[in-house]
Amino acid sequence: MTERDLSTLVREHVTSDEPAFLLSPATPIGHGRRVVRRRRTVAGMACAAVLAVASISGSYLVPTGDPRTDDAATGQTDYDPERLAQVAREKFSAEVPDLPKGDFVVLDENDRPLPSGLYDYAHSISTTFGPPHGNLLSAGARSGIGDVGAGKATDLERICTDRTTRNGDVFPVCSVSEENGQVIVMEVTKTGGKDGLEAMPPYDHEGIAFRFSVTSYRAGGFVVSASERVLAETLGEAERMRRSSNRTLRDIAVHPELGIDKPAEMPEEVEQRMSKVCPGGPGDEGLELTCG
Amino acid sequence: MRRPQREREFAEYFLARGPSLRRTAYLIVHDWHLAEDVIQLAFVKLYAAWPRVRPESVDAYARKVVVNECLSHLRKHRPETPTDSVPERPAAEDNRPLDLGQALGLLTARQRAIVALRFLDDLSVAETSAALDIAEGTVKSHTSRALATLRAHLPELVLTEESS
Image (cartoon, rainbow over all chains, first blue to last red; front, side):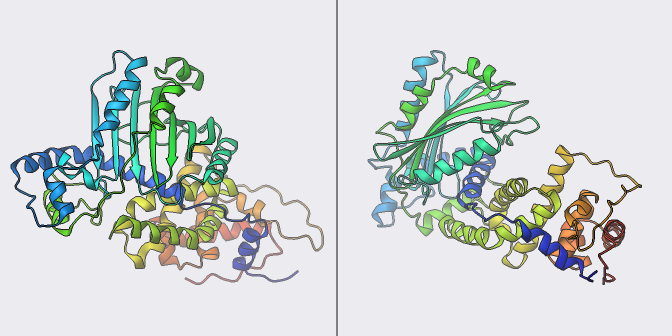
């Protein structure tokens, strides 16, 4: 019998069959961004209204001589994020004739809602159609996703396989394909219930839901996605209740006109004015926006 | 701080501290896959809080989130029914390695968390108390009970008296 202290034993016990650490920070970063974005979208609606009013009155943007700033101030840009809402409406309407009026949100790199004059600084755009507690159709684009882009199909396949084999109840479907330089991920995720992913505002819901989505990872570090969330107890029931097809989701996700330009660096002056309207907005002070 | 820089720092932290946090989680949940799931969830929460966590307290914060996630998961999915009586220890063979895993399985989730924090992460009673949001006295009493259980099942193990 050897006297051994518990610390040594515990360490030996833990390291004896420890598998290699293969997790990637991209996963928590991706999920974390969604969590932050969803929290802020709700709080940020009031902020957007304030910014829009300020934009119209011209009270917070003064031409500085900086072409980027001046373009932003006048809204003169070739880039039109609203095209996403147009394409999504057009495609979804073909299958859902009674498609409700949609919401359209453009966010900067700190997930603050941007008025139309500042779309040059957009990091993500999204449009959503549907009542809060029914089928919810949505489309979105995001930039700055970094290392998860075209040519990274293997990484995404690994994530897909990992999800479906280890937690097939939550990720019943996940497949990856590559075409025309785009890596396309089709997946179904379960939210709510005892074992589903947490549904975050403004997309939270009672009970269980399944989200059918197609995401296109494109060269240049941005993604375009389309999805439908269906409230249903089982995947089979959700399949029967869904109103859009995978083809439509895919058509939106791979649409050649959709995307998002690399956002311009927000000049300090605009940053300060944004922060003044939305104190706490940049996210350095906390999660909750206190603007409006 | 700009988001790309924040995310670079977060990714570096994830890669540097992820393995040891996974070990802490493993000691509590006793399943490597589950430990990975737990730290992924914990890191999502840490990401959301990253801008407001001070660099000097990030380790304590991350550990706290991981332990809370473990305990929360075990509460939801494996409700424990602690018992005063402990099962008979199987007859030990000479030179048989200590089965610490089985013995740890007899502890409550909170006791395992305390063992993980104190004996794996080398935290003091005060630090463990802060990580679990419980009184220092509670940490000591849980530690004492956990050690008693381990002693009962691992007579080969001679535990040195804990220092507080």
